[in-house]
Figure 1 (cartoon, rainbow, N blue to C red):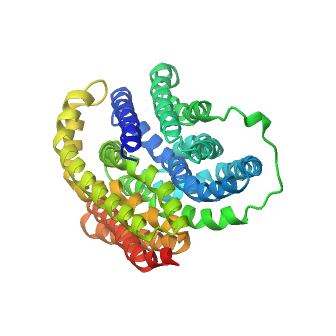
Figure 2 (cartoon, rainbow, N blue to C red):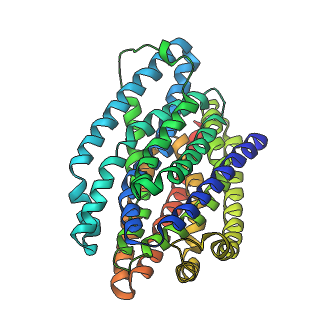
Length: 424
């Protein structure tokens, strides 16, 4: 587990550097401008959906698929393909619906910036929302390899996607302007699919569909995680009340800190769930408890250390690499001044998934979703109150911190309540 975790972490570190390089390129090309503010506002909802799909569909589908494969490998292939087709179709229909309601969605979150800004956001969102069915396909293909204990394939695909995103921005930004970012956001998922597509996909057949087990397992996770991933929506909607460029500044900080802490704990996250499912299925109570406790302690330790290092290194990185093109020294100074506001959120981003996965392995998705939704309501409420009294930046910081740590504490309480069920 340690060797595989190290290899996966290495892949995600490579992915981290590619994404940071992409941020440098985008920042230098477009600067802290209103057009980049608009793109960041437009991409937030599609990216939330894609992130939720990546982080929940595998968790819900993997135990079901693994059980099917243990009973009958041939039937499991038909089960896999049938659900792939069905869920992708549903995602495409959802994309069509979101396409038609993009304008009112944009207006509800960004009306403070004016009608032209709202229209720009809606137009870009309409295209990027079609990343949903592509993300579904990529995640199903990832599960195909996870159940075979081939844990490196999907992280490799995501690294390829990040690299293709960077190259597309470099190649198209001069001719297409801000729309190069829109195009790259969608197309990079196609490159991910090319890496993980199973060799026997054309030989797979459909079987009678029963989506109830998957929906019962997946929908609570989707609802809870959608709520929890609204942290980026909170940041960008609150930031629209700040001067031009602050959406860019805040996005830059959040990207650097969340990627740094999240990527360095991702190896634990990916390997933890399959092993927990196996231990729980076998009734190995002590092994399960030890693995959960060890994973949480290591995850928290890594997140704290990485956060401290990132906060010390980030100002140097920004001054050396980001200044240039349309991104000025003044812009860099503003970004650096905001970094201390995100110490606690950075730790939360690094460990929250580790605290959720034991409950997912126990199939306590509904109680977990209830905790996640409650933490989001609490976080947004605190954020709105603080924003009204002390301004948008204070609202963002308190809202994020409350949201993340309420979810972590709540999930730990649930784990202490439910872990005894492993013995039964």
